Length: 62
Image (cartoon, rainbow, N blue to C red):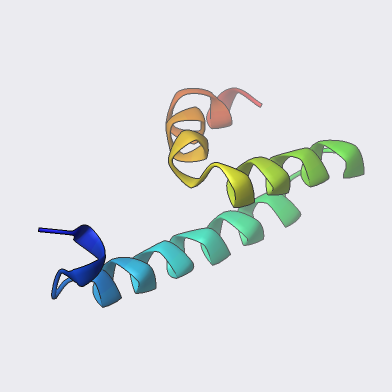
């Protein structure tokens, strides 16, 4: 079964959008400088699964 034809694909897209918006808010409200914020936004936009792993492992240390 193709994941895009799954009855849950719409639900997964909604979750993805909500988590993406939440991540953007977290990044923009952080104390990082502008360049770091832009790099994090690019990571979140281009690699949605990777950023989640990085967030869980490193975010609280940044």
